[in-house]
Image 1: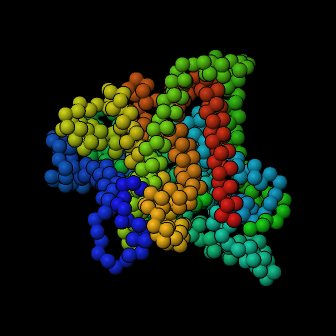
Image 2: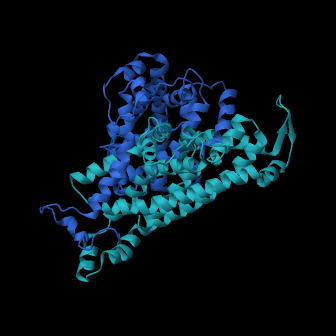
Image 3: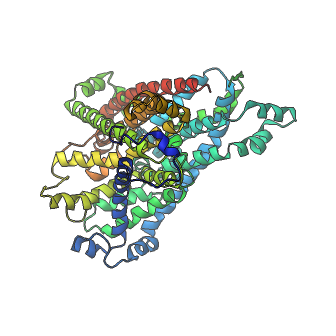
Length: 286
Length: 290
């Protein structure tokens, strides 16, 4: 990096005990983190303000912090049912994706079989497929089988990108487990299902956790498909939020509070997955 | 690891195959159907042949959307890749601060995309948003809802905010895998900081950077939610990228034929990039001797 100072050789990283000096890299890092956090701060700030205060004048922090916006959301079914709906289909999707992906990932990591490479590639293309291409056919497919506006429809639609994701991530973790373990277990008389559940799954527990987290996350953040496939009964929070944007007399405070509440699931687990985030986004290949 | 040839492994893959076939192949065949037929409603269809494809290929609207999309993806890559590398180099190597940086940087990645849109929609407003207010204070008349240039800047800055951390985290993972011995050797040779970067760090990051470029290209190429929430594709159609334009055609106007033909060509581009991605990934796996 040209921006870093000449004295800043990488050996500095091992320096440990000596006093920290102010360096260009620290300044860059701090500026970047401020850039990351400022928009989020603004959302949180507005969620603690009344609409009148927001529109009344520009302030850098809430003058009279209020929890009223959160109360509106948590007491009005048309708001909080959005979260319930989202959580229902996200959990369904995560369970479904993992259930089918686990055996498949094992097959890919342990065996060669006819068409394995093609299948693996085909899964990847589905992960990369633009939801916009699938929105209309999904709408017609699920309408024709009577699943429109149900949670299972969204959960199934999201398997389009989550199953490939789970297979790729799990396969990456499973390759790290030495094959001798499988063989020893078989010699000891374990049947495949028993071996898989009792011995193999605990070994890749962190992998399953990471895969589950990313299935949850990608289903949680998706808007286009979940909005297209639902109307009232299974409407996700994301869709409720965009709907209120177009309404006149919008209550910014409530909208921001709704946004803050959607960030919470990610923020809660982020510490535990911090070392796996790159891995998850790169389909287990880092 | 050498794998055993065993075709019974297909039984383990079968559930995935059935499920993904249901959610990918059936819809895709519907799209192929529509792309080759025309309808006047009531589910009566006429063979249209490749007419829709010709229409789409010569449509100036599609050309414009495609051009905007390419421009957007190019700008995104040109900003995010160098910035991501720079941030990765500035990150602490280990310790508490490394964790703090990782957690704070990853935060935008986990925010629902429509909330990302909402955040920047608010931030860019001159009455209640920090960014819009600050720019107004600097004497710039800021209006992303009316001015196409402002709309573009808002969408690009939003995407930089949203996704640069991904590039940085990938590059950081690449940097972490470089053994200390390399740096010590460089120090003995009195290599400059630039040379260390150019001849040690960059080659070692090559694999992860390729993945980063491909991921960012793919995701920016199918971006929908964020610009849709911020600008709705406007002003006019200045920020209508491919997905937004496609959804407008398919679900807004119900022009099924053109939308389907459009979808298929869109998908072919994705297929091509996926293939490059796959090749890179498998080569990388081989290089690591897995």
